[in-house]
Length: 253
Image (cartoon, rainbow, N blue to C red):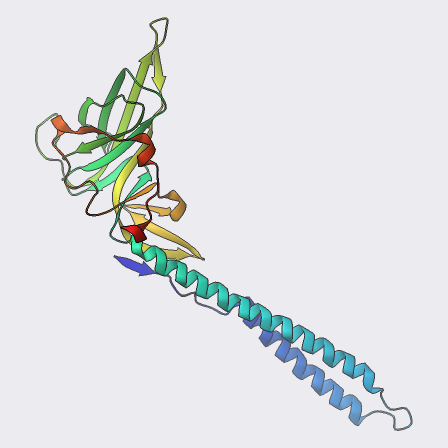
């Protein structure tokens, strides 16, 4: 597990503005001193002219200070947010994707059907597009879970480590006895292994994928989630489509 990118490098915009203002103010004082030294004694400079300029400098300086304070608050809030979401590390998460990385032990997918299907064909393809698993899945409306134990259904042997994708082909029959295809949204289960910041946005590494917090559909407690993948012949289980779509707060785990 890794947390990276928590602190940002480089000078802030307000800091750069403060340096620029300081340089301009030094130049202003140099010019003012030169004017005072070389003014006409019979017609001296009026104090209200440079007093107004000093007031303007003071106003700009105050605004820059406010911006610096706001930047500091923003950084503190971002760090606090990272501390909160760091509780996600080590949890299993469900994210929208069809590909997993496995060491040969298989993995877990979910597919969401917008309506009940009469026929659901499941295929697992390796990184070269070869079918290593073929079977039938649940056609229940809503969310369905598919556990694969890493067995190649063609050879009966365990697959090699690598990337594998799930292809879901679902269909139903209409009133005229015609086959109607059904599009299924596919999700994967994976462990949140890493957290880093892009700007102030936390990005999580989940099973080879990088997703933002909004991309996490659901968290699964390590004690309540899916454990080892089931054998291929008992791979299909069904879950409640409403309960499964509720994001679980990691603080309550």
